[in-house]
Length: 273
Ligand SMILES: NC(=O)c1ccc[n+]([C@@H]2O[C@H](COP(=O)([O-])OP(=O)(O)OC[C@H]3O[C@@H](n4cnc5c(N)ncnc54)[C@H](OP(=O)(O)O)[C@@H]3O)[C@@H](O)[C@H]2O)c1
Image: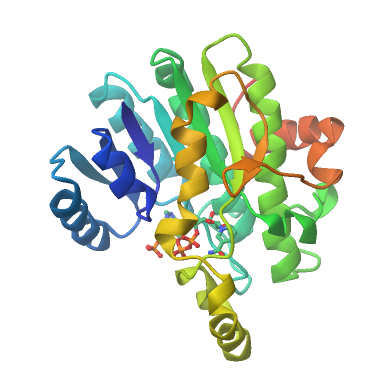
């Protein structure tokens, strides 16, 4: 089992313990190297690799994908996990609104650039870490970069809705290839994701600590989607707490999923039918 996952959380140690070659794709290589040491100590698996990947820059994504395509014989599991939540308005190197650019377009491009290798590595799985926050947003085709109006909560919701819609679209395109695709909500996890929220909200998250998950607990649904044998024949679904979950009607809108797919390709200058 060879896996690429973009950033360190509870699932890398788990996959390492299962004997996977784990490629950690991270923007902060020094931080990733520290995490790598911990994973090796904890799992006894030396086969842990760190590579630089900045999802807010298509040049970095292309460089990373080229490296993987040249160096790796197979990628059985791709976990698209990295994310940014409710940051102040900013743009990626390519001019995309940051949350849509990193959480959706960055992963979309990465998946596109690795898809041939993944198809040659079957059975293979792609896991997209979405969120129940997909309920907070809609796909604003006429202002996808929130240039006219930026609401950080809605922009985060839009990016997570895009994760679920693209999972559905990709599953259809990969039918019969041996590659299956899943999206999921990890739970409310005590992590650095909350870094851009105001102090009162961060305090509220601490108050609700008993109802939140550690990063190891938060990784369980990603691991489930990545390895559970019972999901072998499933593709395109949305999961939470290691079982199928309900998403909104907007997240099951295949017409919108197609429009989003076309817009994403157009924004990235790629052709992916
Ligand atoms: N925490 C929750 O309650 C929750 C709930 C629902 C969904 N999720 C989803 O779960 C996923 C993981 O989030 P988390 O809670 O573990 O948050 P986190 O601790 O903030 O981890 C997010 C990771 O994404 C990385 N990242 C951000 N921007 C990046 C970029 N431009 N290029 C490469 N990496 C980048 C961060 O890198 P640095 O380490 O360098 O900052 C960080 O390691 C996200 O997709 C999030 O939307 C989380």
